[in-house]
Length: 113
Length: 113
Image (tube, each protein chain N blue to C red):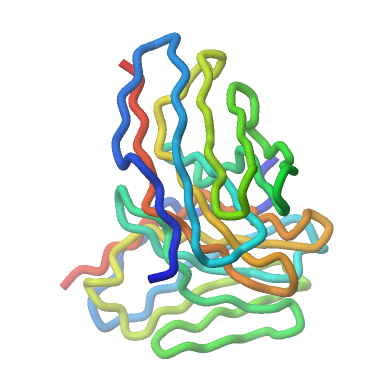
C-alpha cells in the first residue's frame, strides 16, 4: 500500500511561471519530508526538506509547504527554468520505521522555454 | 570527495544467473539502502541496514539478498529467484539520528537477456 502518493505523473509549465508539485501521505507518524530531483539514468539528488514542526521551508527558488491536517505537501518552484525539467520525488521518513524513506511515484516536470 | 559509488553502471545478465551489484560509501553513514525503480512505480525499498552485520527486508525483498560486513559496503545480489529483475537499482546512505536526507549513488541498470 503506497504511503506516499504523487497523483500527477506529469506537469508542463512555461518558463518563468510557477511550478507546483503535490504530494499526499497517509501515515500521520511521518515527521520529516523531502523532495528529490532526478534525471534519467542518474541517482536522485536532494532538493529541500521540511520537518513536521514547520509549515514552510524556503531555499532560493524552491519552497516546500506542509499541511499536516490534510497530510499534504507541495513544492513550489518560482520562477521555473528549463533546467528544472526532471522527475521530482517526494519522500517521508519517521522514527517508527527506523528512519527509512518512503517515496512517491514521481512527477515529471517539463519547463517549456 | 565523499559520496556513494555504485558499479557497474550497466549490467547484463542471462536468465538463471545470480548477479551482485556493488555499493560503497565514504560518508561514514551508518544506514544504507537499496531501492528499485520501475517506470511509473517510483522507488521501492528492497533492503536496508542500520548497522554492520544487520539488515532488514523492505517491501520487495523476495529474490534479493544483501550483506553488510563493512560499514562502507552494502552489496546487493539479484538471485535467479527474482522473477522480473530488469530495472534500475539505486543505493543510498544516511545518518540514523535526527532528520536527515539520504544520499544516492548513480544507479545500476540491470538487464536480463
